[in-house]
Length: 506
Ligand code: C2O
Ligand code: CU
Image (cartoon, rainbow, N blue to C red):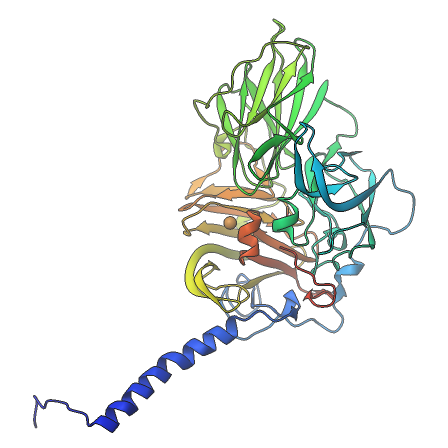
């Protein structure tokens, strides 16, 4: 047996080898490229693969059953039937007319963008807990179409406003009526969910406040932060916005982050408490001083503060000093200068713990939502793309649940950037971060910042049937494929992404 034969190929053989090697590379690459193409029209039901989270009595233990598609059962309930009663008078009725036009900011500057009733932010919608809200959306001039999503309100699925999932985008000249009961008191917001990365940044949003049926704060103000390009604003005004309050008044400041990245809220001039996060009250929130609270993109915090008895004012700084802020106090009162906070408030150990109304230890499903980056093709474009559980859009999981399930989800991020994760239609409670158990007040969220390297475990009850988007609220990331869905068995959607309505939720 020869062991050291020099292997020499003749010329034609070399050519054959070269061709075979090239094909061995190009054919799979071509296949990967072709399979990355997103069709012009498709249903989110047929996208990616079902992930059943190891659901009891069902196959596919949290895994990937290749090629398996979510089958719409013949007797499935269409999302359009998941509504509040469509008749009967509303308690709060609003008409919002959407336009693409020059915005005149409250502070005077003019910027190109989108308005509702000629203003950005759009009108503040206020309701009391338990009231039926009816909003008529009229699209006067937005050629891409428009929709309204009620961020943080656990509406029936048909009212969720996601173009291509729960409705068709409303074309220019069209209208759509949303109706829902404001079941939870709290601070919410609404925004377009059609071409959202462009329309929300461009101003197509507003604040929705649901006041408790009885008690109300002495002074109740909204502070919605938004960046119009490089102009950082609160309630549509750059710089300092004054709000009147008597010395010693109890003020509830409803902070809303409508931007794509986190912002710090910092109260200067008085101690404060975080009364609520994402429309859910915290239990026995401690009074703190000179701490910043980081708000996830899309997130809200209600801050409780008392104006000083000496007649000075309180400043609520949103973002870095030099950005925008609200100053609350008597007319002309002096307020402390904006500056950076001493440290950050950590909600994982803030307030007092309490029994939950369900037992997460008894979960029916456990999902992973692990965010990374992977080289590959996204719709034929090569790059380092966001991945969910190792898969690149549209080959991503449909988290599949049955009504009544207790669900745990591990949100993990090893992608190099922060992701504000937002699940529609539900609130989830934070169980732990990086294996440190939550020890404060139950911390219910609909928008949760998951920083690079962090891992959160959250839990919720699947109590709102539908097809729900579960995505990153950095809407540029969502546009780049950081979007999955939570689907209930027995529910289907007749709507298509793309198609004649040109639905493009993100
Ligand atoms: Cu605030 Cu899916 O959105
Ligand atoms: Cu993101």
